[in-house]
Amino acid sequence: MILHPRVRPLVLISTLAVASAVAASACTRPTATAREAAFGAEEDRPERYLPADLDERPDTIRLRNPARVFDTDEDGQPDTLPALPYGMTLETIRAGDQIFHGKGGCFNCHGSEAQGLGARGKTLTTGLLFIPPGDWDAIDSLVMVGMKDAQTRSPVSMPPRGQLSDLSGEEVREVSAYVWTISQVRGEPWAGGHRIHAVRDYRASSRSSIP
Image (cartoon, rainbow, N blue to C red; front, side, top):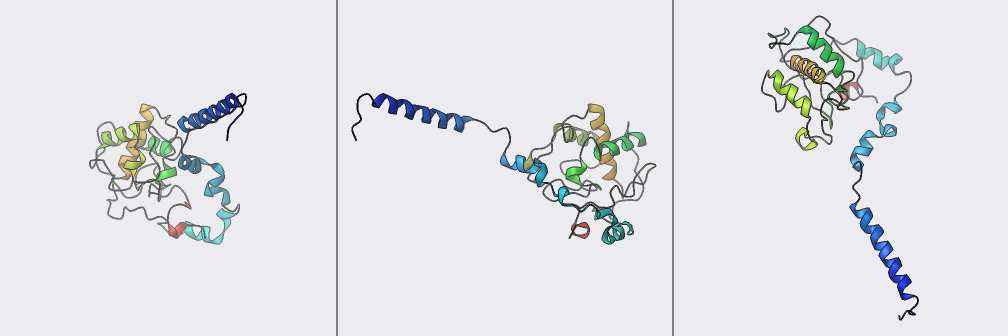
């Protein structure tokens, strides 16, 4: 088709504009991957589907009775604390417990009892990956720098310094002390320790899953 001489410049300008727009969109780096956006979307979180009367349901009440609700993978662990590393105290451990289940958000991936959650975080109650046995400093370093998803062997990475990357050096040290301790002993056999942190963790296992 032969275009009129006056039309040719207009067609050329339109073509260049479209090409520039396509190139710009191709070079724009998204702020978050689709996977990250889906994982963080509030409307996709399973919590919003929980019934309001969950705590009063008969099946929930029955779960309060057994001594062991979760499989925390620590049946072979000793019942008493070993000697604590230099500088670690029970107060440090108790503070780390609060951070693990609070500000640090560690329980969101590792579970309320650190039993591990599928496709999120592994159990911390025994056999820590990438950590020499009993090495508090190595745990501290790992919490400080985090882990990429290729290292965690799950669809999500472990952010540095807690879920919002806002833990101070002292708080990282405290939560690392707690992780060290629960990896060394069955349960929490110290003053201020918990028999269980959550009556029911819907993400924990098939035994505690909601029908």
